[in-house]
Length: 389
Ligand code: CTP
Ligand code: MG
Image (cartoon, rainbow, N blue to C red):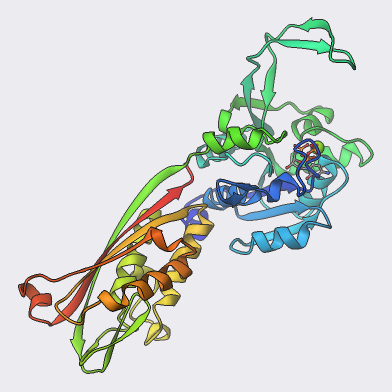
């Protein structure tokens, strides 16, 4: 679901704050961990796409002054407000919280890319039921030892009753603002539940998710690459256009000379129309007619590239990656063989795919049916997407 649709479907309004102003020193990379790639997409995009998909009414991202232009570029598909973070995590949250307007707020580390919509729903349900603060947490599973500066064990720590607390942490916005105001800006806090508690307000822990592990050290990237496999979504599409007068047809973005043209509201590119429907299908985003109604004059004669770019942008916003597409064109004439590679190249360019991941095939119906009688051209398409789970 795109963010607008997700927002409309949700009764509760919440601000999503994503803190991304840290330096990532322990991860030891040349760039901060939140802009590094994880499964082919910058870490920061994972959380922003998840919050948008979960229906956030506003998304505020705190970035450092140096990385802000780069972060802004990475987040262009989403309506995000960027603020400059501070020296500590809590200073970054404070900067983002100042303009938060929704009734509830979720504060999340950019360094935790494995956020699922179900977690947002559970946190919101907890604060709506009356808790002033709520966070996901997992019981401490490993043995704990206290050590000295030389990593020598000095004592055992009883782990019963110890919980590892994750983000997002959810709050009634007024309660978190009050807690930050009371805390003063000198002291740094490790998370936001601790700011709330310092103001004498208790929070609720709900069961956490291992996929929400934080990227802290270099090797955490490898672990999360494996954990965040996503789900494979496959969409299919079909389209047909009738022949009329003309001297060419447009198919998969390529102009092919022919003794007839294709009729349609746009440029009648049946191949790309089928493909757009396949992508929309994989995203659960309805069909091409819902996004570009034929009744609206601005789509008259428009190049179908506009539709395809729109579908690709919706996929990006949803945190989905188009991994493969396959189109079958059905007609007796014209012959597509000489144009196949140009069609694949155009499609690959727009979808930012390697050309090997674009299939284009042609077939006839042995002179049967409407394509056999050369009344028009039909196309079907399949799109395979890797979607957030
Ligand atoms: N963060 C922030 N502002 C800071 C410090 C941290 O917004 N001044 C954010 C980080 O970008 C991260 C989250 O808070 O998304 C959790 O912090 P942490 O894992 O400690 O990240 P870094 O501070 O970037 O890493 P390190 O401590 O290793 O330098
Ligand atoms: Mg830090």
